[in-house]
Image (cartoon, rainbow, N blue to C red; front, top):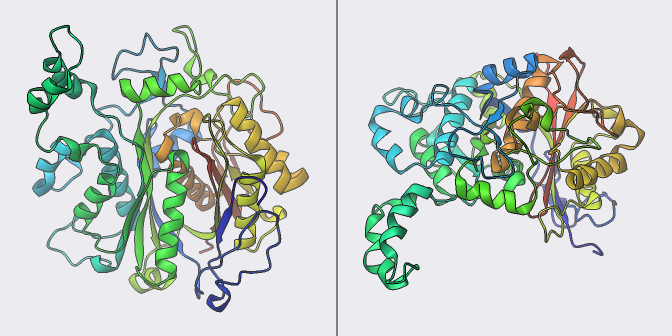
Length: 475
């Protein structure tokens, strides 16, 4: 394949007999695989974003219409010694997991790290938005969807342990010279960790707790591919529904790197903007800007409810959007900035083929838009390669200036916002600390805009790229 990447595309209306021999797609370096046939596309019936600008789509959408960012000075720990002191934090007043889970499950919150809590909160919002009755909403009521037919796929990060918990264990593990001693760690240090300590930090525990709370007994999986995790999870859920193994799935992702260890690691990569106490948080991030200086971390993500059209119609639900196309590729990445315009472009090409649309059919874009110059440049080139002259004219909806880069949860926020934009036929306000180059992503107020299809892209630290095309549902 020349360059070190490949693409896989899923076509909602594919012919199963042609699954192995492929379709007519001829873009170079793309392996085309079609999915089992479906009489109708998979639909999104519920969306539940969670971030520094709010919990649930109503709060999120209201903030974005008003142009109100959640980026501020980090309060959860002392970040003054780091070169970046900003983040998108969710306040305790805005979100408490104990208020969301059923009373019978509150003891389990003791073994939930922040990432798990965020997934629980997002799932609760998505289920409510879809109008579903699950074990979490009414334990004795009849569930809207058979739990055996409800799947769950959630993107997660490589979760960092709590610094205070580790310190309590490491401190007594010192040898006579004060250095860490493995013998003392095994004899004394580990005794200071709770027996269930590890269960807080396994990436699959996000999906584990969500499936238990909502009694999702269908196929479940966890994907850990940084910023592409959420969209890859959506693709997994779509496959599961298409092949008939589930009627509906909770899908998306969540992550928080707003803790000392994860924050430090990101500072070391050179991906974070250098900030000072005098900076206006709203002007630091500049997606696709020539003077962009890096990104800012946030905590959050989102869960979406995906359903087959048959399931939705049977229960009398409301479709918010259709999943018309999905594709993913892999780029070579050895430094955290490995966005290949060719590889991401292949994903966009394949997603458009999957959706049976052309560049002229794309009415808006929700790009990664990280404000990291090297990554923005690769994404901009990919959009120009695939969309041609229209790339600079199609309006972009950038979420990171509102929420910060929520890594494994970032793509889910973009998918939730894209769905809301299709429903409302409105572009939210755009925040930007400068001017954008080559992409219509500069500062603007919210405005009405006719949209039939929105392209949502992601490109991750690790080289994974995704492209999703969502379609409008007309009532």
